[in-house]
Length: 108
Length: 336
Image 1 (cartoon, rainbow over the protein chains, first blue to last red):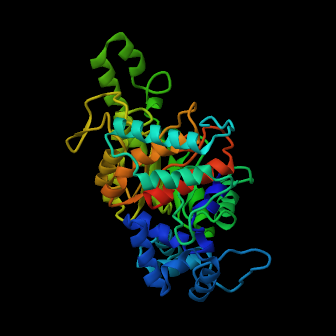
Image 2 (image 1 turned 180 degrees about the vertical axis):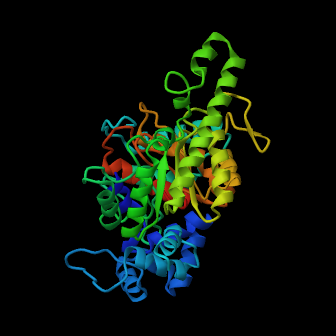
Image 3 (image 1 turned 90 degrees about the vertical axis):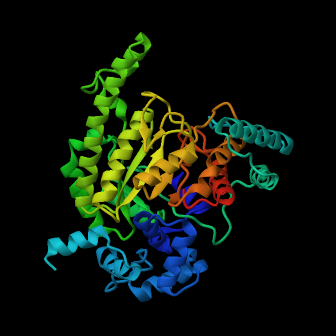
């Protein structure tokens, strides 16, 4: 069922900008349209690009926001996971909890 | 059907189900029925012979989940990674099979360590989820007297006192676990199946929501409901002057967003003897008033047994995708 919903209606997570739009809903309680406009504005792309995996692969790569990794798409030397979240926090103007915890525990 | 049994229906039979469901839902929830155009669109979705359907390009919504993933991949971390990398989940959820705040309290450090590790490896937001399950605080599972035994005896005062006692323990646990997981780096908390033990269950949760909102201003707080109608187990509990017993989704949304939730998940229980088309029409009618009242994101629950998805453990792709598309197309909801 998870796969069904992902294909039928999901934004696509980090394959697209689904995680970024989700962060605005979670942290600010934004409605979908507002969250999409906000993220598109921050990324400098169209709202339509946000659920386009081809466009977002390029944008995420350029901005270091983390991408799907598999055997044919490996990006060593590029930010992912926690490294990417530092950039996402800055891009979206958000305080990401795990980033702040990492900063604190690593003594940065 | 709502129990997952496959049936063949004509377009006329589907139309009749939609009309009957929206009329019944409108009457019960005191909400307007679906418009003629909405009913026609719903009919087109369900009358299609396609094995799968989907929203239009660009209309995709944010997916959150209660639990989520498979738990079949060896470990919580691998499961979350697969949910992120393979399923493309927008919001991930760390959870434990003892999916209850009361149980999680006893293993909090283990869950905190998992959350800290998960946050190092994942890019997408990860919330922590569990259920309020207020009934676990009554005997024989918990310390309070069992109100479900007292009520049939006519001891209303004793039952209410037991409910109040259980609520104190419950809110303490919700706050303890939520604080602990947020201190471990969680992006948010999910109170799933809220109201399962009625108005007292919801009230206990709302107090925890308010606490989290005040202490962690940018934490995600998702409140997913147990059903379309809040049962009056106590009967007189009020939130900000509003009686919780008897609330329908629009009013449930209003109390949740007032308390500080950022995502609200309405749930409309499946009638197993009705068609999925009937159930989706009923669900849409009951939830639709939320969309005008919402200042926060609304993610209808389209899991097994709610909002048009059969109660069967393996819902077919045809019915699950139809339920997803119908809720997005007609409600213009913010997620699922």
